[in-house]
Image (spheres, rainbow, N blue to C red):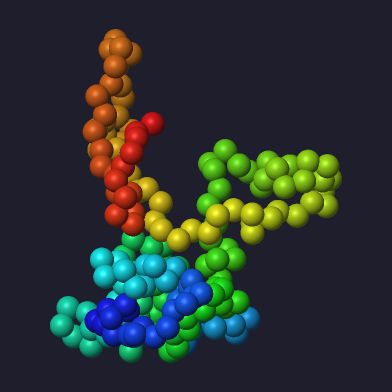
Length: 182
């Protein structure tokens, strides 16, 4: 593939630019083209590894994997890696086509839609108040992914021990280290 930073953006003036919009050929159910966006820092970072892939395992990229070109930005959420890229726009703002920024938001696990409504407007009537998904931070990087390996799934644990030895693995996404286990 081609490095987004070196080959695609080249030596263009990037003053005031914050976002790289990758507009794809595919569309949503309303016919609106799909776009994935990444911060310009991710695109121009030589260690960020964002590439435009045109091959996979030494072969031309198959259509179902994004032929002719797909963005691969390791450490970002899947919605940030569009297939069938047809246009790249560097801008100060995310494209209106960026469905990921509208829909893919982080919320704490204890926030239900009803709790979210109260947070946005405590005086809001439950039946008429709308959820403000735009109030959550946009998912850009992968959240922590983890799995408990020991004890095994559905294992029966004895109540005779005061402690349980737990083993597992975790991936933090975007090259960050795991900072704590809860």
